[in-house]
Amino acid sequence: MKNQTTVVEFIILGLSNNHHVNIILSVVLLDVFLLTVMGNIIIVTLYRVDHRLQMPMYFFLRNFAVLEICFTSVITPRFLYSLLTERKSISLPGCFLQLLLVFFLGASMFCHEAVMSFDRYMAICHPLRYGTIMNGRVCFQLVLSCWVMSFLITVPPTFMVVLLPFCGPNVINHFYCDTAMLLQLSCVDTGHLEVMRFFLATVILLGTLTVTIVSYGCIISTIMRIPSTTGRKKVFSTCSAHLLVVVILYSSSTFRYLRPGQRGVQDFDKVVSLLYCVVVPLFNPYIYALRNEQMKEALKDACGRISKCLRFS
Image 1 (tube, rainbow, N blue to C red):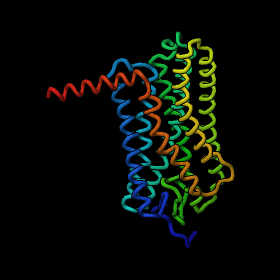
Image 2: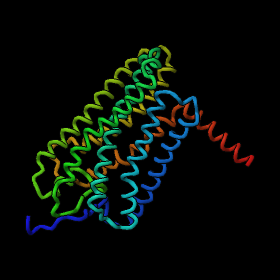
Image 3: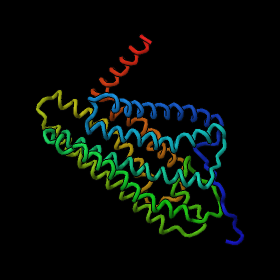
Image 4: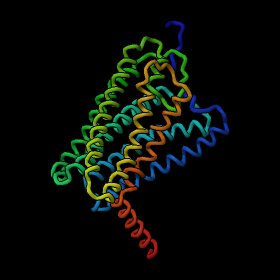
């Protein structure tokens, strides 16, 4: 330990060392980031200005949209900066802050997915009691519980990682500060923290996945009993789109964090990480909200009002 130098910054390798590939990646990522943020801002704005959307489902979607804006803003802009400037270094405080926010916001996303699945279960399987059970107080408590639970699960172990000594090497083979890589770069034994990380990832992923599977299982069972073929197809079309996002999100996250015997991050692991860090946040606003008929009507009316104001200004 006496001959080792304390690390003052980390080097994030990213996805490629090829300059031309990085330029293409930066253009694609910028477009994806702007579409993701724009879609979620539209959801938040429509919820605020249209009284028809003052319902539990849109309340959860509004909060999920805010969460996604925060999550993508933690990862993508820093990644774009490194691609465009080819500066791959990040300070220790910056890396630890990104680690904390990615872990915390990522856990919150899974909790919100479970809550939204439960909300869809109540709306489809118990429509007559939906408005009574899912009142404003219950909705607020569910969202608050997502944030509090995520905080309690992720923040304490993250600070344990922050307190670790890092003496070199300082190269992170990823496109953001990843917990697994930081544990491997520490110059002390981190076996107990790796076990804790695996346990917490299991609790977050499998716990929320169980709620989601049970909710959609009941939803599908209810859909199959709908006498109208048209009504059955309409509801199933919506739920199948939701399930597609859930499958991509949980399969990629499970492969990345619950795969046994992983050591280091291979190129394929980074591609898998792109699915839940970049691709899924792009799909969510358009699949969960902007395909919805009420949301489409609200967007159409909002565009009409804006057009009228511009015409008479």
